[in-house]
Picture 1 (cartoon, rainbow, N blue to C red):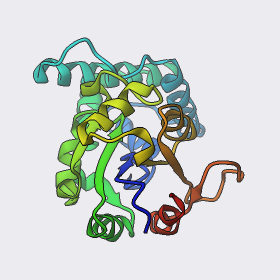
Picture 2: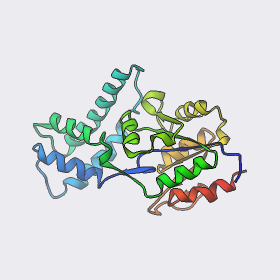
Picture 3: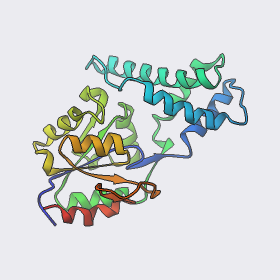
Length: 240
């Protein structure tokens, strides 16, 4: 194996693990519990509204490093996102109670599942002497999710946007992660499922990149595409 790559970074959600079921279905099911009036197109409308809300939202970067205030800022950022969604698809009286419940649901590791090859891939990478890190726009709930899923110890570093004060695809979050390992960009590979955040962001920062596309929906181009994390190993052998 080539020794040019010293660190492999991963995105978190939808790269290492995924939510159980559909995010839209989870929001819809719990909204109904708190008084949301479901319509035939509610699920599609919620999914569309989330896409729009994320596009319009500011990046999850906050002017504080205090842990308590940081968590408050993260929660408020998510509150605004979810409020934006239900403002469009139908607001209901007990929205605040609903938000508290779904915010906790996604904090619970039981709401997430590792992809089948995640643990074996991380174990094999470490056995080959590679350092491992996470670069994610997930908020600080990520740390508890990683511990609950049993993979926290596999990573030397975890870099999240709210702490790094930069969010993918901004180059600064990648530089922050690289600094922790004392490596140059060309000594690192970043693996993620988003063309914009992971591939474009990583390439602009000078890292090698790979796109995880388990559904095979991305046209082949100049970016390495893998359908499983196991396909990283032949890819790593190509770097010199």
